Image 1: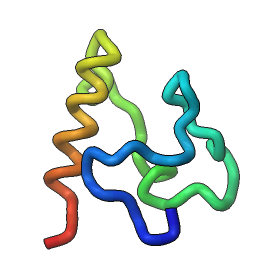
Image 2: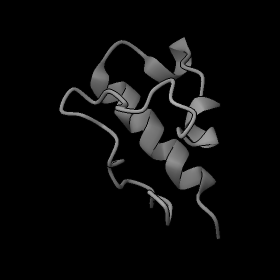
Image 3: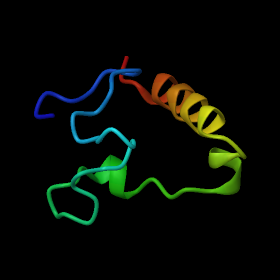
Length: 63
């Protein structure tokens, strides 16, 4: 996404299973490759993880 991605906007690189199509590819943005999953972030459900990431996006968006 050359112009970046707004908070809450789905990344164009996600497939239908929410997996990154360019995982491990050098073109993958640093903000993605630097994000390391943790128990705190992932929780026990997909819904929890998606909510956590949505909050992170909002907290880190440029002002």
